[in-house]
Length: 110
Image (cartoon, rainbow, N blue to C red):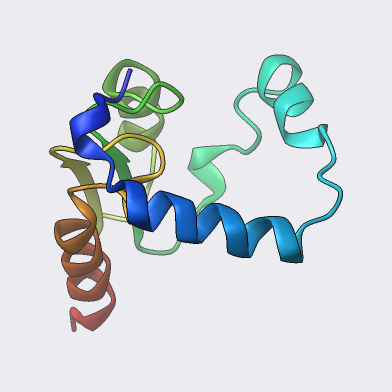
């Protein structure tokens, strides 16, 4: 669902080349879990501050799927962020600077 314009081809290429050298065999466990064990954890048991973040074009995580989970988080310090111009791999896409900013600001909060 992510438009090609959101991707930086040089960044994606560099990431792919580095990843293939590190990860020679990837298990299919996460994909199987996603279709058989969702949600994988109980949000009511997450007592720590929590941030949920996904890209505007994310085809794995979206508002409809995550908002009910977010609403059940018991800690009042929680943040829900949607990054524009990004998909599921937002650290490699146009919205990466906003993604980095949001993560840093969440962890720097008092």
